[in-house]
Structure formats: C-alpha cells, structure tokens
Image (cartoon, rainbow, N blue to C red; front, side, top):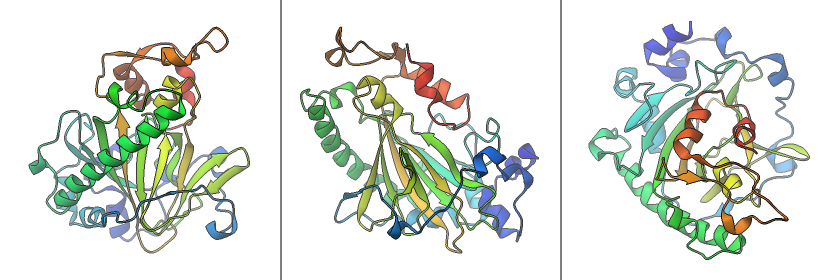
Length: 314
C-alpha cells in the first residue's frame, strides 16, 4: 500500500483532493504514540516557548501556491532521492517509520552547492531565493551570539562552515479528517546545527520540556529557532537540541511552515566536541564523526527522538 500511494506522486494533498473521510490505515499511529498525543489547552492558556521577533519577514505564502498547484505540476519534482536539487515528497521516512505522518514537503538544497534556480518551481522561485539570503543574514548573527555564549570568539561557529550547508523545506499540512489518529510530524530533534523556522497562523508545533509538551504559539513577523543535535554535540551539551513535533491539522485551512536547516558544508571532515569546551573535569561526551556518517545514520531510521545523539555518545 505504501509503495502504491508513493507511486501516485500526489502526496497527502492528493488524498484530501480525492474526498476521503477517513485516513488510510498506514497513517494511523501505534497506541504508544497516540496515548501521548494530547492537544491540550489552547496555546493562549498554557506556558509557551518564546519566539524571536523579526520585523519585516517576507511573505512565505508561495509555499501554499506550490502545494496547491495541480497534481501533475507537483509530480514533476516528486522523488525519493533528496540528496541534491529540488524534491517534492510525502514523508521522508515513509518506509522506515511505524506509521506515516499527515504532511507533504518540498525540499530545496541551497548549499554548499547552490541549486540551479531554474530547478526551483517558478511559482515559488523568487521567494525561495530571497528568503535564503535573509536566513543567511540571520544565521550569522545567531552563530555569533551562540559562539560568545560558549565563551569563544564570535566567528568560531561560522568558521566551521555552519552557514553554507543549507536545506530549505516547505511543509504543507492539509486538513486531517481524523487528527487524533495520526500526527503532522513525529516527535524528533533536528539533526543539524540550527533550524530557522517560519510558521503560519494555524499552529500545531509543540516542544517537549520537563513539564511536558507545550505549544509554540504562532507569532506574526517572528522566527522560531531550534538548536539541533549537531550543535548539542560540538558544544559538549552546553546547548541542548529541542525535541519537538507537529500535531495533525484539524483546521479546514492548510498549515504551512518553511524551515531552513543549517548544517556543516564539509561532509568528510571529522567533527566532535570542540576542544576548547573539553577538559579533565568535563571530558568529551561524544566521539568524532564525519557529517556524512552522521546524516546517513539519521536517514536510516525513523524520526524517533534522541537516538541520533545517543548513537555517537562515548
């Protein structure tokens, strides 16, 4: 059934367009996932994660325009090979996960090898190129602050090439007829260094804290910044990655988010906890690895929380 649906190249959007009233069985998550999947109180009445205010954020509704093109237009870039260029896909871990998630994604690799702009669908090309420039600007500021927070020079993290390896994804979460049986995005931590996230007004993003899952309330003209597993490792756990998920969309209006994952540009160099952050009193908590090995490990499993960092722990 999974292969058959994947071969249609229409994604979750295509299922909704067909008029289904119940979700296919392979989207239904196991009891252990559903038991923890509580929508809880409305975002305004619970503790919330602070967001970073950024006045003048560009309109990103071009992401909606791509996903709401005719199915044959979306299918032009539908492929499971996500290693380069542009790819449209439903569930990157479709064949590894216990159950599929209710979303579609367009992914664009912005660096270190810059994608040929002609490969980017025309309906969102201009917005993608402009947003990438803005994210680079924001990333340099964030890395300077994070470097200083580690007691290092402001350029330490940028000098590692952590701005050049960029992947932009546009997630599309259509209305789900049975949102209590599935998820929009399974709980996980992002593998890279930083994620710069722009989300619309629909909501559904949650972050896990010691007090449980809490909402990340959508804010106009604001960014959500996630620390990823890679930054947790090289900071020797001075910074911790954020465990998060997205609930299935119960709104009749689709939810759209645009995330840019910031990764090392060098996939063969050895990385590990920065030497400046280790000592006899605080030895390195992780072994060295290449980013190529790191990402291969990430893509050979389902999105399932902290097992990636645990794999490299020593």
